[in-house]
Image 1: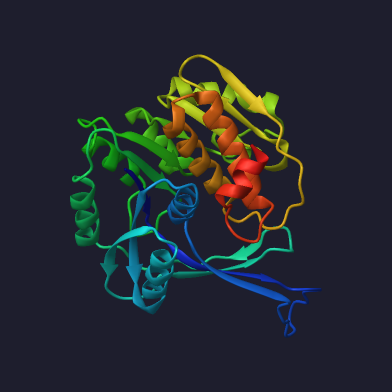
Image 2: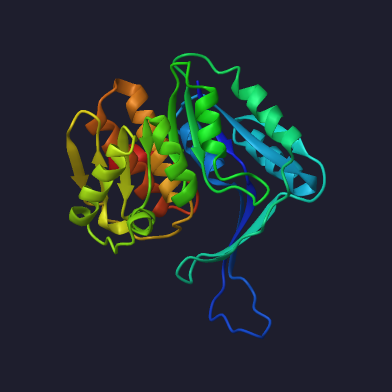
Length: 297
């Protein structure tokens, strides 16, 4: 079974606003509402690919209720921790203005809430895959991913971490099976500008020295690189297509990689599946379907 964890899920209100003018009333020309958060996006694409999975997440207020309703409607196993007070996030994403978005803060998560999550994670078995994805509210300590990995270290669980700077770096010593920074996140770690597949390779290898087994680096329209634990480096251009909605493309890449890995345990195949899934989501209004992904494969 694959499990995803999302600390700060959201309702993503994705809109197009033609000719946006600051200080004036603007109207949308298109609207879309989806359950969001990186782990939930991974769960959605895994389900689209026929991979059984469970989404673990925190939910608060009427927004949390709607997130759960929509997750269930997608056929994903929803397993949430109810948070008292506040509401889960609503994120506004203006898709036609260079990825402009306004993200909510989310509710405070208590120590009791964290304990409930840990209790649920204790039920994972050898052979499961756990995806720790996305940011955390300010009420959660930045070493939480490392704490989870330490708690599960005696089990044979493959852990995927898709997070930025401190969350990711704290987790490396626990040797995650896969991490997926994008080129900007990788550059931020090393204070470098990395804008090509060639430039990310040496820094991905540095993260491998720090503990990560496999490093998948996404570069949007420039493709991706995989530095794998078997010593190989795979790189590929992105498939050609028209960018429609970049929201969730990186999460789709993670889901595609996992699905490809589960299919035949081959790194190169998983890499190609990841690129196809990420690109298929970028070329679609919604997160990628199985048919869209295999067409690009």
